Image (cartoon, rainbow, N blue to C red; front, side):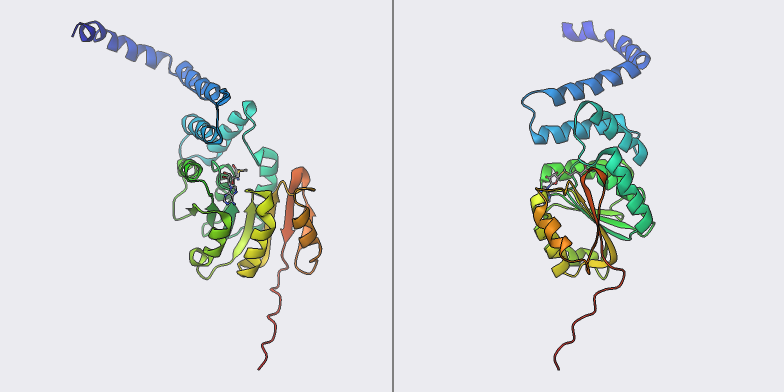
Amino acid sequence: MWLLAVSLPLVPVIVVMVTLYRDALAAFCRDLVLQTAAFPWRTPKACVRSTHNFVFITCTHGNPESVLEAFHLYARTRPTLSLGPRKGEILDEVVRQVAPTRVLELGTHCGYSSVRILRLLPPAGRLLTVEQDTVTAEAGEEVILVAGFKHSQFQLLTYPSADAIAHLRTHLGAGLLELVLMDHDVGQYLSDLQALEREELLAPGCVLLFNNAHPPVADALLGYVGSRPERYTIRQQDHGLLELRCPLLAAPTPLQPS
Ligand SMILES: C[S@@+](CC[C@H](N)C(=O)[O-])C[C@H]1O[C@@H](n2cnc3c(N)ncnc32)[C@H](O)[C@@H]1O
């Protein structure tokens, strides 16, 4: 009771102080999130949470550019971005060029590349993004929603990539993929590409980007696509982004024996 009597007169003082010093308070909270990220017992999930929290409290909700700025700000002190601004600009250029209506992204993480892609899609454009870890998927989805995108524009599939690709046809309907970004597990890139080919999900003229696909980790993928010049035009972009372009015309369907 005495505690209530002592603390009640402090309430207006606290309200005034918070109003006066709200910028400093916001900076303090931001630093606290950054400090939390620096704790030695930090796990990948704690890293996901701290990135998500930082972006959430720092960005202007509904503004994708501000969400990206928040990611960049966070990455100044923590190397948390897989693509980052430089590779991000290459991705932007490809999205602008292709203007895809169907995009597949493997590896959502906290939603950085998803937001980059979504903000440049044409009105009919739709992103399917795949993340196998449920906690990470929740964080990524929340960031994409905070950036102002709706479930009519994107769908997050919480499966390992191989399972997601096996069920992709049901999500795509009659459409085919015009852009694919692989940024999940380099060891999985080749088998996922082969699964996309097997399921005949790649549209003529489809562009595929593979992050960190450099030798020796991506030797199998590089060997495979290098031996199929009729199927792919290869461009090794700066900073380890591999770009493949499928021919504009679909390969002729083999004649069935009568
Ligand atoms: C490098 S991060 C993706 C970064 C994200 N593209 C971005 O720009 O922030 C890789 C993500 O892929 C997920 N991942 C790894 N292997 C996967 C797989 N086989 N299927 C689906 N997701 C996978 C990881 O859980 C992780 O969140």
